[in-house]
Image (cartoon, rainbow, N blue to C red; front, side, top):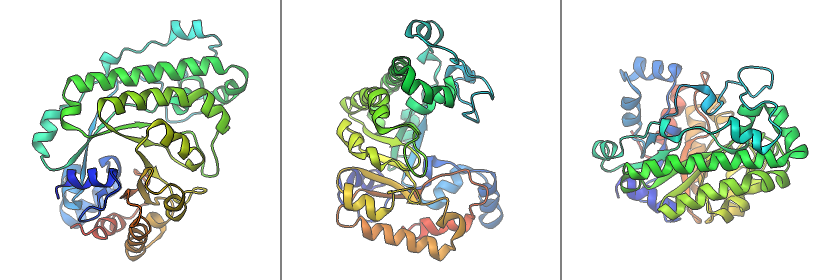
Length: 336
């Protein structure tokens, strides 16, 4: 099987000939780069991905450098940084102040990626997080949470604007060859802590689920398998994600509440692909390489009967994650 064939098998809950593996979002960071250069003489992210034999390559849409376009900040704190929509209280005011231009998003060279990686599974990654996390960036987190109770209509309108923006970026990608060369599409929203959802499940379903469903429906209608990123304890709304057509949850954090591999396989096995589950806050930070290998083998055994599991780190860009543990994760999949 090619790498692409293996990934497609997993998304159809069939067992591939060997486990499917990815370094989450094909992302390395300074400390990891230094480790691979010092130990293996690898000088670029591409060399590291090839050495680890990752099955995926990511095609990233790139948002414009103007932070006001998405409102991305390094913190959600209301009083820190730029909050372009802080104080907006009506849909009319929102319409005047927030109308980002999707043509400003840079679309990847999908044909070039396929020519470079003829056997890999390619993922079209839309720029930026949507929904609740984006609202926190634009309004501020406290204001967003207050609005879920006092003014949900503004958040509903905002979430739908973000959905329409993502769909337009997706359509521009399709026009540039995304669907011809990519099988998978990434969308994302963070709305959960490690214990529970940050907002009530009822508020999430009322305010943000319809906009997410619109994005997923458009992507599925275009022929993509949809990968949904969301950190933390998300299983409380897994049935909702499955209902609206999400194929895969990526960034699975097993140390969060009701997110263990055993729990997910027992309750949702065969319904949604689990991408991750090698926990970056526990075993990848504190464990030995042998611990990491055992965790990978344990997860593979748990999902053996129901299928639908891709080995990957749950988070990236953590300076205290030993490079040896990344190597161990790949080795346990039969890589290297």
